[in-house]
Length: 353
Image (cartoon, rainbow, N blue to C red; front, side, top):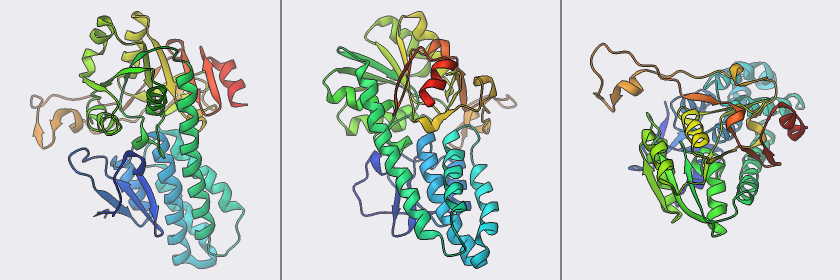
């Protein structure tokens, strides 16, 4: 059972994932912006449940959370099995890995922590693994700042940006990927306006992206998802900037459902598309986006608003959480390593070498 708690800190988007006093705290993104509360997690199972229930979301933030979840798993395993903790931890790691299928950062972080586990002996591993999880967290923040600056370098003049879902500090260790680009562009005085798609059905754009940008005094206007093409036709938008939950080896991009629609509209209107994501989101083992597993969630998320059913009785719903945007519709993929223009398999292979 996840415990709701309050922390004596100044709540900001950069504090979505907190490790404090050997405990893991997540800013509960299900109830923002109305309520600013934290969930305290003490076990690997609770961490997996929090990821599944979208207390935390966004591929990089899921990865950081999973790294800390491995620390909690090690604590449990050592308490239960002592020197045999390596055998006891594996079922807990599998629970973490199964929390959500599309965001590759989840399995990336767990595999990275598994590598550290292999170097250890039978002594209590908690302190060592805590140190490594904190490093993963700090490296994600540094990567996001680099992504922001690389992305901003592609923008040469006063720019209007449209984004989809939330790829900000809330979705990462801090600063953000797509919103990291937005923040860097704003700091450089090149931003005129951000247009944020509402992002049905969880409304991450309305609840989270707008909340982040307003707090940073960055001008933001909310759009219904279906209004994006009309807004493009009206002018004032130069770039689509989004994050990603997994990028295939050929540059195809899985991101929140509706991204594909946005990229198609952008191509028609002559607007460029930038995907901002750390290299931990790139899955070179997959040849194309056709191989990316797409999470399907409960149809109730579409059929209901809160506890009130909005759709006609007996109607069914199709509720994929992500779609795949072909690399041919992407002008630039930006990671902490640099920029891939016109991404394809050969360019991605060279970038990730």
